[in-house]
Length: 380
Image (cartoon, rainbow, N blue to C red; front, side):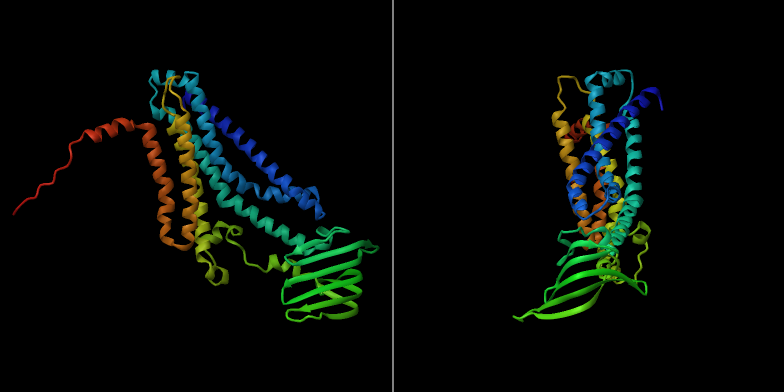
């Protein structure tokens, strides 16, 4: 690559990395501060907090990278044109393709990076996040509940204890289980201890009562007990027992799903949609790069503003990306929508490159100057 092209590549690459790290950091901090109180209120450590947020970073970076590339190319080309460097390059004999080449190389590198995030790192992060949450919920007494606070462990399940007792015990326990609206159970106990039997964890309640309220019954049933055991595995079963969601499966598992699995049999569209969404994500990085170069890659004088061109490029890129999201949703219900899902980014790239390298105005004028086609009927 010649010196000038290396100069262009370095300028755009530095701007891309700066935008990527900057925007990722800002969005990550916004999400982190929003969830910080939630995690700390459940007794989580900073290490656990950083682990959870780090596992969702690949999905965040995958979305930001094409946008950072778009902004970097627009910034670099606009700066080159403002400083008359782009005019000098064109006057010296550089063709539009020679100017576009370093930006195309950067775009392909970004597309490969997005592909790595989409096909490998993003599902890896969701899989590890699922496993981490499973471990946390399995030992909720040590990881979630906080002394003196009412903690919602599951939808409709509230746990509270007054204080900790010596020997890893709890005092003043209150539990309300409303997960089944037809059978509402409320547990009160003076103390409780965790015990292990046959590899399973139980919470043993001592000197308490159970108030059971059934739907349609006015009077609750009161049961007084000296000891009562609750299986703690039920709080992790909501994670462990549920099938893997499409985003929590590796790309290989999506390519070759287990057809005997009930979830796969019932949701083939969701598996198909997730797979092709991962495959098509790198193409949108190419779309963003091509549109950015098509918008500001042409030489213009300082009197010719680029505001409208940049505005149209931003609107066009966002519209294509939103159409891509719509196509992904359609693929879940209609396999025939796959054609639209892939043709959308490919045609967008072709049109943008044709506009950037060719002279569309001359082509349109040439087409307008062509005489209309006349169809003559030939009689036998």
